[in-house]
Length: 176
Image (tube, rainbow, N blue to C red; front, side, top):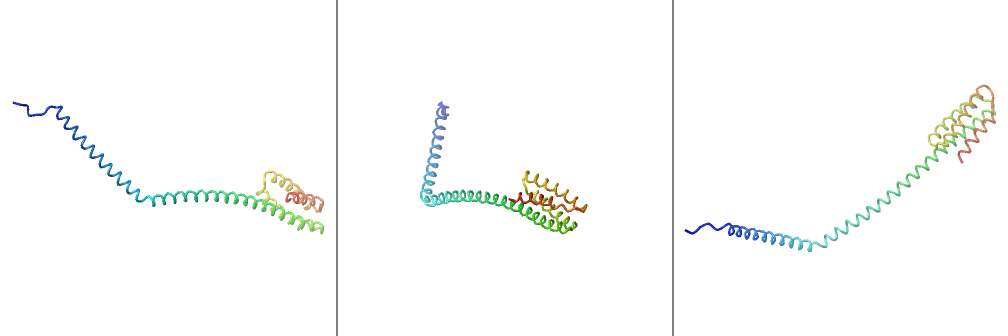
């Protein structure tokens, strides 16, 4: 009786041939898919190129816009600093005008009106100090000390126009 069963080597050989055939079929399928994709891409290459060109143009426009925005931000910062300087000078100019009014009131020996004007000078100097640099704030504090002494002197009935001139000159010097 002959053995009806094939040997292990024969069976393994058969399985290897089946696996090789399956791998070959998968390779052919992948090759056909790649060919189809290649044909599709080749057929749509003008559209793909247009899309790539548009993406590149969009990137260039975005880069240009970023540069412009940066430039505008820098200009806005410069303008903001300039506005702060102008506001600072405006407060000092208001103080200077009030000093002139106080001077006129002192010449007329109207101490109450002069003190009212000096209070306005004090408020203008406070507003200027909020906008000024550290050095400017120190100068304003010195002026405010002189101003406080001046108010006390006016309240006692003395009319120190020369001290008022010194305060006015210091304020005017800061405006320049």
